[in-house]
Length: 164
Image (cartoon, helix red, strand yellow):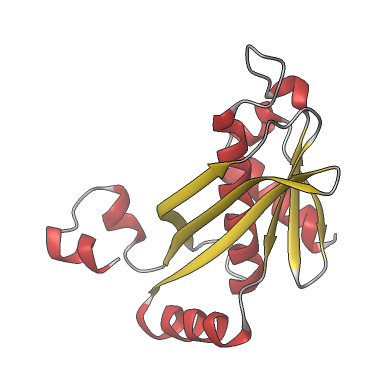
């Protein structure tokens, strides 16, 4: 099974709404991850892609890239903060592209995750249509190992939440 197929299965298992959205992982070449979804399952009242779906696909491309980089399907990846710019409507298939961050940033992220069980990194993704960027996304993602259950059970104190 290819890395793209593994990540698609992981997304569908860990984030069930991805099945309803028709999310597919098209490609992973070691440099970028391409996640797509059909317009008809993600359309708004104007016949263009729903903004929430565009945002979701951008976030999912970041999740997938980090799961591939960490090679740890049991870690928990969460979005800490994000910003998105909708520059033009998307009228066809939605394709989010998350490019691997520079080697130094990624090495620091991985080292911190392996040493501390938590790490954060900023990622960028775009949604392009016919060679033109329609959506620009920037997000800070956090990977958690040991703290995952405490986060999910809400037993972290305020100080620990701020450190994420």
